[in-house]
Image (cartoon, rainbow, N blue to C red):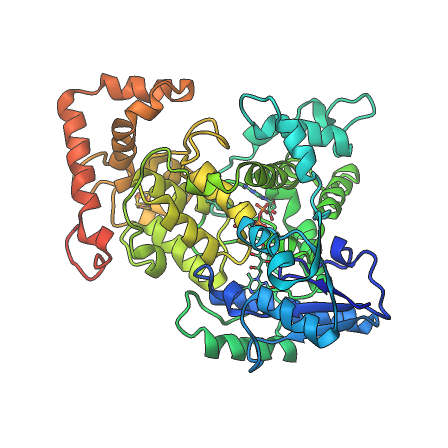
Length: 520
Ligand code: FAD
Ligand code: DLZ
Ligand code: SF4
């Protein structure tokens, strides 16, 4: 009997659990481009094109290995445009009664697939996603009985379990678990930045670009130039280039930002990793090998390993532990609509304008831009977490809910009330000024605390602490800023609140800011 093996657009790994016991003589692998997946979030056009192009190349690689692949393109006139519809159609075509798949990365599909047995009359076998370094059950065991879940504790356990960057005596390499404090250098003018590899689209990718250009003409983001890797071998080449040219200084400049330079010393591998073109364990082992060979310093390699072995696995664990309730959390009762400038970049706040411009072009921004620019503003301005999460899920080519949601709702917005982070990542303009060159040419004055020309991050920061006092002032990590707030005069606090009100009701927030001439 034929078994159908469904592979989703972010499951493009040859060692996927759904393919592990594939019988090439009898089984059929199904991949389907469907509108439901291309439109459930406001996806960037580059993201849609990347997923489709990578799916088509993966299908070709499977066929080269002698596997029967049934590939449904978006423009197939019979396409039902949902995954369930395509599984049902393919089951009929191939007279299959059984479908094997790897658990999806998002709760909404996991929930839907759970109903397929009844709804489609098929035997459904959903297997664990073994591409992650910590299984869902293992994470749940670790979390069980803990009052708080902290990445640092989880990370140490993962270091011990994997042996990565560990010494023979069971101690961490370099005598410390974490070199975070050495990852905060500002980028000096004369630091030379590495080139990023670019991959010219082949005929398959060009066909996808034409299709996406035609079908998603109104979607967000620039489709071309398109230079992402869409095969495993090109993604590996991209990672090789990172290791050779950027890894040694990854640690030093992890938190730095520079106008017009979206990648700096970052790996830009999350899009490939999350789609299955790269393997998390292999990336960590390779980075470790660079340290052992003396080609990259420990602060860089530990920082890189921590992001993947620590943060990436941790946020996935939290996601599955807390869903679906997590997606409704709004601990700070934030309700303000997302301003238009998140889409257009049309704001006088240069840090946001530059970050949105990077995202429109590349479907990418690095962590500090996501957390301390667009995320920090959303937190300080009290933007509605649902709208903010929708934006983050759409605009980045690496975004899937398992990783986007905890990072946005938890880390950036503190809407989970502190499950993921022990305090809100709230910061005034001084932080952005310290870590970037954005403020230099900004219409606002980062040194001014209040008044029409003052940097909005400055008064919004204090206003955030004032407005959220009942929820936050018992947090020991906020004791210092609350002491400073309390040392201000009542008049100062009133001025802050008035400036915040003025800005949050201004034309700038409504989206017609740049057309307007004054300061809103
Ligand atoms: P590098 O800085 O080079 O780091 C290497 C790798 O570490 C990344 O490729 C990624 O796989 C992993 N990593 C680093 N930080 C995190 C993190 N906090 N969580 C999970 N993995 C991490 N990452 C996504 O992959 N998809 C998302 O949708 C996503 N949404 C985010 C939303 C917000 C609000 C924030 C603050 C962060 C988000 N991140 C997300 C995490 C992080 O910003 C990206 O993984 C990173 O910017 C990807 O670029 P890079 O490959 O150059 O990363
Ligand atoms: C992101 C995406 C897009 C744009 N399109 C498809 C698609 O047409 N077919 C498919 O199988 N997967 C697609 N994906 C990836 C899925 O959205 C992803 O598998 C789920 O969100 C689970 O992580
Ligand atoms: Fe952003 Fe304020 Fe700096 Fe302008 S002055 S770039 S708004 S932090």
